[in-house]
Length: 273
Image (cartoon, rainbow, N blue to C red):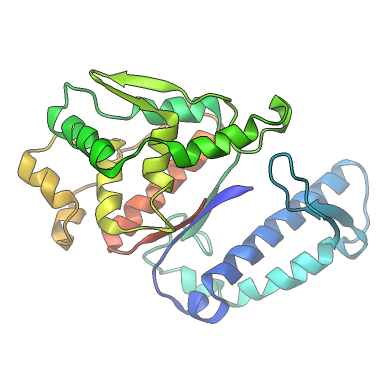
């Protein structure tokens, strides 16, 4: 399971294959190559047409029906992507420089290190304007973390080794002066706003999490969520992670790069969490 995201820049591949169709094929190709590597590592030299594996869609405590998947079938279905890859070379939404670089994913479970990393990026009272904006946003929009907490509680009914969504059974909490923010609240602000993060909300998220410069005057902060293109051009992506950051943090970093690019292009970022 994963959080999938797509920069909603209009293009020929999306028009003809649909965004869901591209996303499905990318996942199938990645899964096929992973399975081939498993077989090869075990000394199995059979062709992909002779390789199979069991796959099931499941949720915590509810195993799904198993299906036998032939690896070659996945490769064949994904092969059409090659016919459209050339369109990605000059696409402004291609954040990775690779074909279909407007798409990405964050794999579950969300790690303890990643939740702590997110919370550490939030503003403190020494940054009064952005801190106050965060406080007001949480209070006015009702970010209490309930929607994320439901997933965490669902994880709690199974053994720790089987948790699907979160490594931690309880959300970490950071105190920002008089404001306390939990991992559930931080994730809800990012992923709990519906299927699309629209540009004005994207700008505020980038500000809250230090992905863009937040040493700003009040007027500049108001302009972050405006639709004026030249304002967006002034803000480079500044979010980083340490050399020992885990894979979940690296995937979150890629997500915020995509969010920043979508914001600069004034398009939404579709998120399937």
